[in-house]
Amino acid sequence: MTVESAFSFFIAVLIFGITPGPGVFAIMARALMHGATSCLPMALGMIVSDILYLIAACLGLATIATHWSELFTVIRIIGAAYLLYLGYKMWTAPVSSDEFNASKSQKGSVAVNFLQGFLISASNPKVILFYIAFLPTFMDLSVLSSGDIALASVLTLVGLLIGLMAIAVFADKARGFFRSPRAMKGLNRSAGSIMAGAGAYLALRH
Image (cartoon, rainbow, N blue to C red; front, side, top):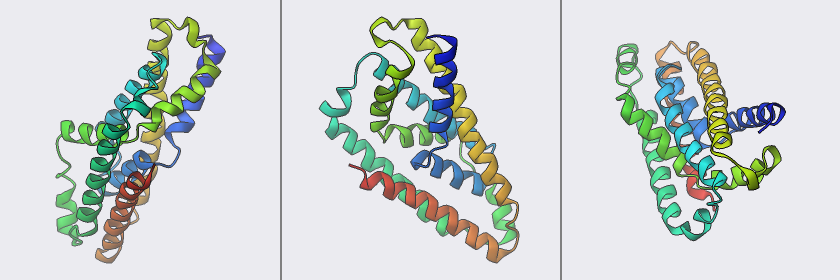
């Protein structure tokens, strides 16, 4: 991978990272509820899953997306159901100031948040097809080396992390405008709707 193709690949991944989808919706919802910092483990979980798909694409394993379609369908349905559940919990969250402030500390463990992010991204096996589609634009897959795969993985890590955390910071800033119980109720329901929408998006994908 040349310097020019590496830079182009990085920009493409960055744009991909901020493209609306289940992952972006989940990051936005979490940032609205708990702030941008709490989104880091979830973002890393999504990125690790994406990198695994990237490596699979680089190694020519696109057949997984078709031959294991039933398994991926199960994963997608489980992920969608979980997002719908989170949406319900956010929709029905307490709206008093004390309860809202207390809820900031109830963010779940880093491992749980990481797993949530991983499952959200893993629930969308078509990511591998996305990488299969644009990888040939940036590298010659016929002479791909382990160094090229490692570089692509690092660029993906940095690009997606910047994109997802930018979304989180933006949502966190908007969160500061919500202070009254009425506004917090609207915040909870907005975040819940976003999360449920991400679940519905996953469930309805074919």
